[in-house]
Image (cartoon, rainbow, N blue to C red):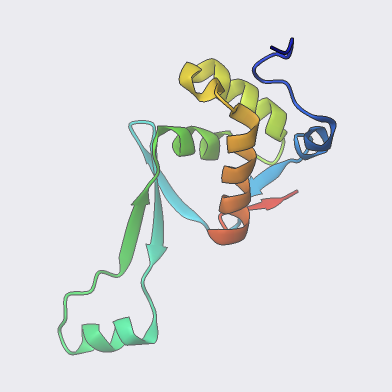
Length: 121
């Protein structure tokens, strides 16, 4: 058994925890009862064509984030470090403390690279 704290961070990860993210300009989202809904335009050429021939294609779609994702996205302000976001998440949602920084870093990477919702400052 080791004497490490549950949220102990290895030296390689320490540099990642100093990162600061901001929400990308142009991201449309709403917060309803503490839950974030990301709103995306559905404006591909095929969708526009189908609308013209009277298919019911909505002009926007919404993606509802879970309570963890909603909390994290609301913490991203261009000033807080990843470490501060993790500390706030762990304090607000106790069950999030299990592998807190590993999961947080993976999620932030997903938001940055895959979803393109956030960017490094």
